[in-house]
Length: 56
Image (cartoon, rainbow, N blue to C red):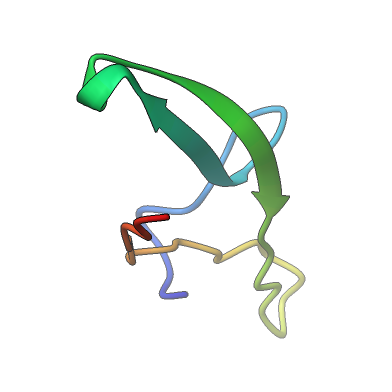
């Protein structure tokens, strides 16, 4: 997680886990994983940059 100015915001900041179906034509959100990175001034700095595809 890096930081400002691209911090996570919204009602559920975090990473969305999406199950892709129909050969990539469709999909559904399976889970939201909250992320947080509070700095010493109590400011949220979470900003995830990674993505990985896991074939099952």
